[in-house]
Image 1 (cartoon, each protein chain N blue to C red):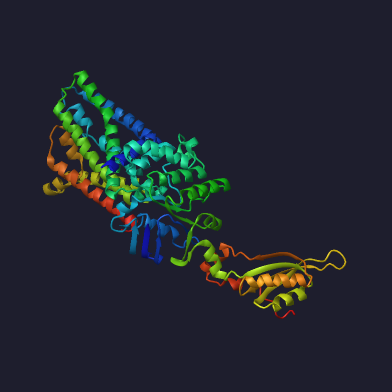
Image 2: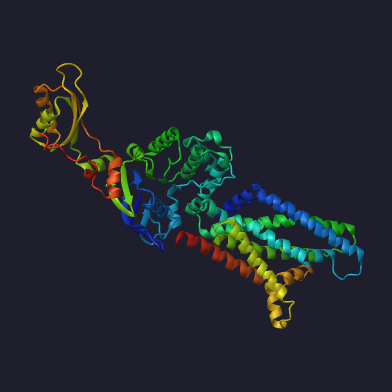
Length: 332
Length: 249
């Protein structure tokens, strides 16, 4: 649906997008991530034909979007970042105008407008003047506009910015309900949004692509995904020594005491983070601890949040350096 | 073509729901009503003494005709593209499947409609004069007067649209339009200075006073129309270029 090659946008004083390439298949929901000023909006604006690229090629639905910009725009429903709308118009007037502008056949304008009013859940304000609507409603009017000509590709620049949690959920549900039917490219810096809606993520920083893949794969790739957290009763030194001694455990990353023992003879509760070569090692370890009489409260794989991945990819610091220094081996 | 009409229709709608439209129309009618009254009074006092006709004098015979136009024309055209740019609505417009030319033509068509709406009530004055019987109304001259008004409007609206296309906001657009149209008018006045016949011909041609005066007398001189149309074509072409420059083409 989208093929972008070596896309570059240079302004006189800076280069906003530096030769990025990616492709989007039909039916995918792509999350476009990046810190503010990374070049997200510039890239989306080039995709939608608002800005002309300095270099590179864009194909949308097989149409060369640089040469035949108008032809490519027919495939796209676009929601710009700040959702600019004509404030003096009523919602339904605006959507009718947009439908006509996007060449929706005259006989279908009314039914398409009704349909998207329902999709965006703004039927109750259709006679209101746009300038008097709240930000949440305005952004859903923008979304309805993007959908009004029933385009196969939606490009949404921060569709949930400025919405309250309920409205965010509604917009996410709408996006998810369009999955399969439409190809969607949305930019955001709200990471849970990406995890809950997107099938693939592109991370952009300083005008370059720095990461790409499904959200869960990205999480795994950055950390190895083999860090476990153990909560167990016992003396700190004994637990650490036992975990450290287990074959297959690479190293103990840290430990702390969560609770002191309450009754006589009860050991304190320890939390230990450790890294293993493979997950099966943990099974043997749990049996080992139980045999030694250490009561187990919790044992889980540490989930790296996408926030961490995002931070590490866009600040170019390795994830390890942010973690507490390993103390394991010295403290026997 | 369809998109030209769609854009024009929205622009006209927005103009007529904005307070600007009613301020302009009210002040306009008030001002020209007073001018008409004064002129009618003057003509009544010297009945028969003057060669010129009341309507000829009213339409372009005095500076009272041009000076307000230099203010009204910029106010009418300032929002066309500058407001789209300032409010960001230019982005959804330019990402819809419409060409820059269609946008410029749609806006221009809307501006010409405002212009015609301003002049429509003056038909009442013509009717009044015809009814009073004091002056013989030459309907041919009335026709050419309105043709002249339309030609001047084509030029003024095109210049205003261009300034709105290059300006960052409405105020700048209005100032630029005022400066350009005012400049043309002043050049026209320079024809009265002692500049020699050839230069005077050029100055009068550029300034619109002689043009309007000729049309008001019933003289349709196509050279003036060629000049007006040339300015229109160049202005619209440059407006399209300005929109493309925004997109970085």
